[in-house]
Image (cartoon, rainbow, N blue to C red; front, side):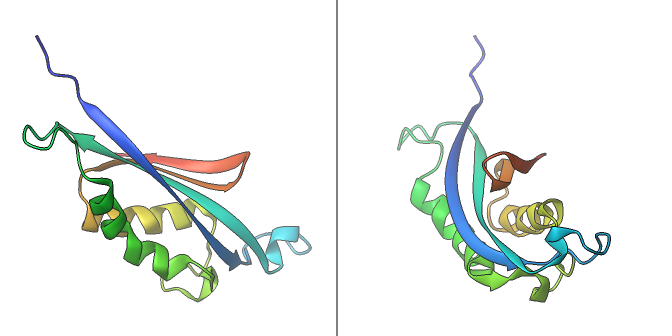
Length: 122
């Protein structure tokens, strides 16, 4: 009998401003504007036999805290690597830093609104 692979997820939100200057002149997103981004990260692995958990949510929070602190209530264009802070670029920026802190992250979803976002898996 095979052991199922488990994934858990944790959600976070952060507010940030940006301007997408690579868009055509007059595009509304070329002006400074803000979003309340929703970030969801999945962590995969096997249950710890002792704790009965995949990972403690507090450990996920601790790994993501520096990444979120760098983004929350900042103008994204001013962060190194986010000079063109499209949702795709922000997601990749988060992915790189989050995976360095917590390599068991298997999936990341970043939403800029209720109806638009990006998903990274790997």
